[in-house]
Length: 146
Image (cartoon, rainbow, N blue to C red; front, side, top):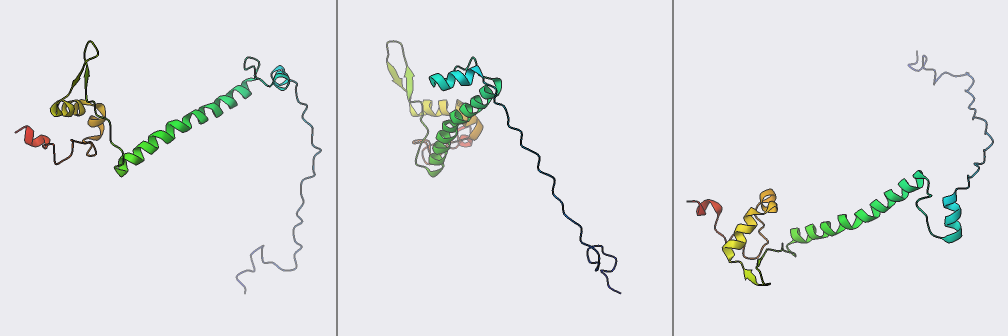
């Protein structure tokens, strides 16, 4: 007794099932509705977006937003890569602008205080790539509180 005896796939002397395809339906040609937006666009070469159908507006708005977002993704990515490689350093506020266009430069302690109060420092901690703010030049915070 064969283990394939009960299998419908392996039965011999049975006619093979006929494979039929669906009959091809005649293709219906879409009648292109002449739109004032497209007519004007073909004639003048300029798009009058006030006459554009909503589907066209949303599609081109999406394309526009994608193209505008490319620089917003690429430039920060390049800067992050440079920072991680140590080829770029974060800009540190060097002083303050007084009345009469005078600049009062900060001391090293004031620079460190401004850095410590910044949002990026609170989120990510010390930035060891900053000049003057390395582990060799700055004391540890726990040492300064003693």
